[in-house]
Length: 79
Image (cartoon, rainbow, N blue to C red; front, side, top):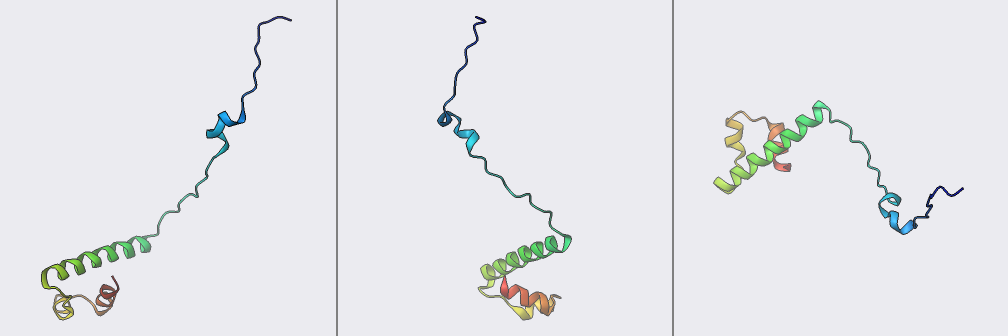
């Protein structure tokens, strides 16, 4: 029975990359409403920053004359 096989035992400390496996939760896709809401918030934030940079304040009357709705202006204050 001398086939020349060598059997060894690997230490557990040498297999660190195998002992710790981190599982992640699969992300679900965003709905169309969530995408639109996120995009609207980004646009409002950019509009607000632009107005603050140019005029130093957000001019609601100017935006209302340009056709922005009251609901959108209310969201602009929150952005």
